[in-house]
Image (cartoon, rainbow, N blue to C red; front, side):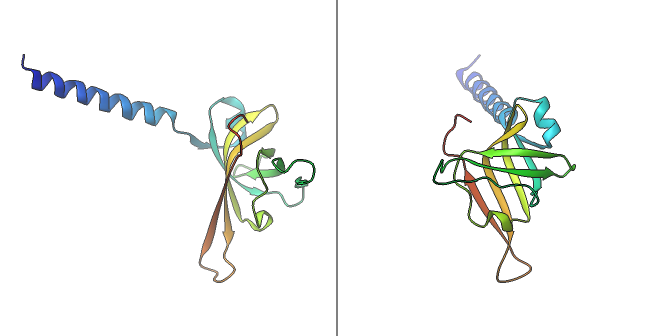
Length: 136
């Protein structure tokens, strides 16, 4: 057999393996109950529970922020974010958290907030925060 077809098959096999590896490592959307069942990273969409305490004390630890979120299925969970509290966090209409469960807490590595715009009713502003360390 000639080298051209063999080289082409090898390139195609590597491309397929790369696509499969990328797809399998990507995180998916779920709920807090899904996060308790899996060790992989999930995206959870929910709303800030404004009736519960937001804890952030910059004097003690500027990289610790905790709050409570109710996911789209109605389950509430404490969320810990190792990073500074995002600006206008309390004004967010919807929150997308990326992270995993550790015990009864959800450890968020990213927070994406969808906030209402202060200029128009039609426009929604999106703000993202990332955790300071990878060892969450």
